[in-house]
Length: 146
Image (cartoon, rainbow, N blue to C red; front, top):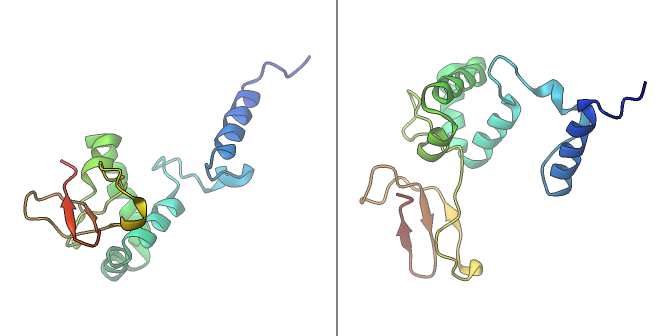
Protein backbone atom coordinates (compact mmCIF):
# COMPACT_ATOMS: atom_id res chain seq x y z
CA UNK A 1 0.00 0.00 0.00
CA UNK A 2 1.29 3.44 -0.92
CA UNK A 3 2.08 6.02 1.75
CA UNK A 4 1.11 8.85 -0.61
CA UNK A 5 -1.87 9.90 1.54
CA UNK A 6 -0.10 10.05 4.91
CA UNK A 7 -0.02 13.23 6.94
CA UNK A 8 3.79 13.29 7.07
CA UNK A 9 3.88 14.45 3.45
CA UNK A 10 1.76 17.50 4.30
CA UNK A 11 3.93 18.23 7.34
CA UNK A 12 7.10 18.01 5.26
CA UNK A 13 5.61 20.26 2.57
CA UNK A 14 4.67 22.90 5.16
CA UNK A 15 8.10 22.77 6.83
CA UNK A 16 9.90 23.00 3.49
CA UNK A 17 7.80 25.99 2.43
CA UNK A 18 8.42 27.78 5.73
CA UNK A 19 12.16 27.05 5.52
CA UNK A 20 12.23 28.46 1.97
CA UNK A 21 10.73 31.70 3.33
CA UNK A 22 13.18 32.27 6.18
CA UNK A 23 11.81 30.08 8.96
CA UNK A 24 14.63 28.50 10.94
CA UNK A 25 13.95 24.81 10.64
CA UNK A 26 16.01 21.67 10.54
CA UNK A 27 14.64 18.12 10.50
CA UNK A 28 16.05 17.31 13.98
CA UNK A 29 14.48 20.32 15.72
CA UNK A 30 11.60 18.31 17.19
CA UNK A 31 13.81 16.93 19.95
CA UNK A 32 14.20 20.46 21.39
CA UNK A 33 10.43 20.90 21.80
CA UNK A 34 9.16 20.70 25.39
CA UNK A 35 5.69 19.17 25.34
CA UNK A 36 4.98 20.12 28.96
CA UNK A 37 5.32 23.85 28.28
CA UNK A 38 4.53 23.66 24.54
CA UNK A 39 7.62 25.78 23.88
CA UNK A 40 11.09 25.56 22.43
CA UNK A 41 12.88 26.63 25.64
CA UNK A 42 16.22 27.22 23.89
CA UNK A 43 14.52 29.68 21.52
CA UNK A 44 12.90 31.56 24.42
CA UNK A 45 16.25 31.88 26.20
CA UNK A 46 18.03 32.92 23.00
CA UNK A 47 15.40 35.63 22.42
CA UNK A 48 15.68 37.01 25.95
CA UNK A 49 19.49 36.85 25.98
CA UNK A 50 19.72 38.63 22.63
CA UNK A 51 17.07 41.31 23.08
CA UNK A 52 17.19 41.87 26.86
CA UNK A 53 20.53 40.71 28.25
CA UNK A 54 20.21 42.60 31.55
CA UNK A 55 16.85 40.95 32.21
CA UNK A 56 18.38 37.51 31.60
CA UNK A 57 21.26 38.34 33.95
CA UNK A 58 18.73 39.28 36.64
CA UNK A 59 16.83 36.03 36.11
CA UNK A 60 20.06 34.04 36.44
CA UNK A 61 21.06 36.03 39.51
CA UNK A 62 17.66 35.50 41.17
CA UNK A 63 17.02 31.89 40.14
CA UNK A 64 20.44 30.45 39.32
CA UNK A 65 20.31 27.22 37.36
CA UNK A 66 16.50 27.25 37.53
CA UNK A 67 16.19 30.48 35.49
CA UNK A 68 15.05 28.66 32.36
CA UNK A 69 12.51 26.56 34.27
CA UNK A 70 11.11 29.61 36.06
CA UNK A 71 10.86 31.60 32.83
CA UNK A 72 9.22 28.70 30.96
CA UNK A 73 6.70 28.11 33.75
CA UNK A 74 5.81 31.82 34.00
CA UNK A 75 5.50 32.12 30.22
CA UNK A 76 3.32 29.00 29.98
CA UNK A 77 1.05 30.24 32.81
CA UNK A 78 0.69 33.65 31.16
CA UNK A 79 -0.10 32.10 27.79
CA UNK A 80 -2.76 29.91 29.40
CA UNK A 81 -4.33 32.78 31.36
CA UNK A 82 -4.06 35.69 28.92
CA UNK A 83 -3.60 34.09 25.50
CA UNK A 84 -0.76 34.33 23.01
CA UNK A 85 -1.64 37.69 21.45
CA UNK A 86 -2.02 39.40 24.81
CA UNK A 87 1.36 38.10 26.00
CA UNK A 88 3.03 39.18 22.77
CA UNK A 89 1.44 42.64 22.84
CA UNK A 90 1.72 43.45 26.54
CA UNK A 91 4.89 41.60 27.55
CA UNK A 92 5.59 39.20 30.40
CA UNK A 93 5.93 40.50 33.93
CA UNK A 94 8.12 38.61 36.36
CA UNK A 95 9.01 39.26 39.98
CA UNK A 96 12.54 40.59 40.30
CA UNK A 97 12.63 42.32 36.92
CA UNK A 98 12.35 46.08 36.66
CA UNK A 99 10.66 45.90 33.27
CA UNK A 100 8.39 43.29 31.73
CA UNK A 101 10.02 40.93 29.24
CA UNK A 102 9.14 41.82 25.66
CA UNK A 103 8.43 38.70 23.63
CA UNK A 104 7.95 40.54 20.34
CA UNK A 105 9.32 43.62 18.64
CA UNK A 106 7.06 45.63 16.39
CA UNK A 107 8.03 47.68 13.39
CA UNK A 108 7.37 51.42 13.76
CA UNK A 109 4.10 52.57 12.19
CA UNK A 110 5.88 55.20 10.11
CA UNK A 111 7.86 54.00 7.13
CA UNK A 112 10.46 56.77 7.05
CA UNK A 113 13.87 56.21 5.51
CA UNK A 114 15.12 53.05 7.27
CA UNK A 115 18.75 54.27 7.17
CA UNK A 116 17.96 56.81 9.88
CA UNK A 117 15.79 54.57 12.04
CA UNK A 118 16.72 52.00 14.62
CA UNK A 119 14.51 50.28 17.16
CA UNK A 120 15.68 50.05 20.73
CA UNK A 121 14.11 49.25 24.08
CA UNK A 122 13.13 52.12 26.28
CA UNK A 123 12.05 52.45 29.88
CA UNK A 124 9.06 54.64 29.18
CA UNK A 125 7.97 57.69 27.27
CA UNK A 126 6.00 59.48 29.96
CA UNK A 127 2.78 59.23 27.95
CA UNK A 128 1.92 55.65 28.88
CA UNK A 129 3.17 52.99 31.26
CA UNK A 130 3.80 50.39 28.55
CA UNK A 131 5.77 52.27 25.92
CA UNK A 132 8.07 49.72 24.32
CA UNK A 133 9.48 51.12 21.12
CA UNK A 134 11.75 54.09 20.62
CA UNK A 135 12.72 55.21 17.16
CA UNK A 136 15.81 57.34 16.86
CA UNK A 137 16.56 59.75 14.06
CA UNK A 138 18.84 62.74 14.09
CA UNK A 139 16.16 64.28 16.31
CA UNK A 140 14.88 61.63 18.79
CA UNK A 141 11.19 60.91 18.50
CA UNK A 142 9.15 58.55 20.62
CA UNK A 143 6.19 56.40 19.58
CA UNK A 144 3.90 54.39 21.78
CA UNK A 145 2.44 51.24 20.38
CA UNK A 146 -0.91 52.01 22.05
